[in-house]
Length: 585
Image (cartoon, rainbow, N blue to C red; front, side, top):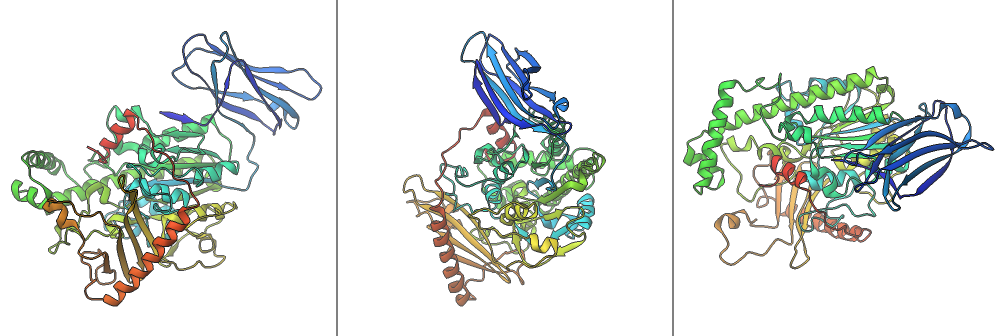
């Protein structure tokens, strides 16, 4: 489950580099082989100018089931320009030998900061005390906010992980990258990811996540030195509720193996995505043991009702006699406990960064890929007296896409800043990070840099926030999906090329069909977006229909810059994780 960028050769072979060795120089690399006997011998030699080659490492590898990590001290050659040779040989020609992310480092020699891009999968801003929630779910993030800047109104650009993560890693909308084809939205090869931008600039790069939707399923392992999304140690206990602990441990192991700077790391935790209640001591903080037992019994009754053919929440709750408000209150408590656990682990990570002397050289970004919906499907709406119609489900509903977005960079971003305007989105993350660390922005991007605001050097354009999710019809090859906008007081959702109704269409599917292509919401008077007001404001319907149709044409035109990527093949481990996280049955 550990994927590494690797230099591979067929024995016998050697690769030579002409390098200037820094003070305290060291070479860090993994050694690996494929296939069966015979063993493979790895060797590292250094040749100073006008001298004989000196062997610094020679090791015969027989374990083909894991990487063997090695560090080679080059300090004796500090300041010299030498030939560094990586060699491999075997008794049988043609054996594959792998050098995992060979990296030459010395003392920190750059002003560019380390970058920690910390995504809390399923983090709803409205359920975080740093954003005013009435339970103290994020005290550590509150302390971080006091050291940095908080965007009060930030959105993800899609309602779930796969399209959302691909968008904020490229600063491109889902439809521009080709939407979902055969269920996948693999990032096109010619759309550079955040990891690729950072790696090309000399950053060591790593990704730690248990969610395949944030990794190889979308091609997001490109440009990454170490990519981990399979966690046998986590799966063994099904403690995905403790994912942050495992991810942070893997990060520190990576830092031990590759201690050079600068580095870029992407965390995407799933602590609040499932496996409730939360780990100790947070389990029980908001939901007592009696309520936990009641929930287990109630979940069993719901499963039995489904087995008998009950469909939809209303029918299931009516048949079981379970009070929806009681169940959702408990579920909210589970979610809040898990948020508090992840917050605690993030606080521990920051404390260790400070202890290791890395904090002052670190840019930390805390964000989310979507809100609470993935965990509990619009929790809170189910206890309203007036429920929305089945077809009313805008992506910009706060419980779906309102997420945290916080930037902390000691000595550079002034602490205690809170921006209620402009409204921003996660698609702005990539250009902002590149701008902050002094790297060129992508030639093609749909987000904008927020760095002028963060650094106090200027303002940024007030833009409407765009959200979209699209898929390609496998029969007609036609794009179908939803394109939305948040524009001040108004939110509008336009359905593009809706799927035509089937003969004898099931009643449930028919009820979910929109009566009109564009739904309109008054975000001032209906902030949770319960009911469309399209009938009340025909002039606004016309305005936003034209606006979103123009956006759709622009997305199609921009998409011509990119070649849609191919599908991916899922491993058994990825499939099992997707089931565990609730994406598939």
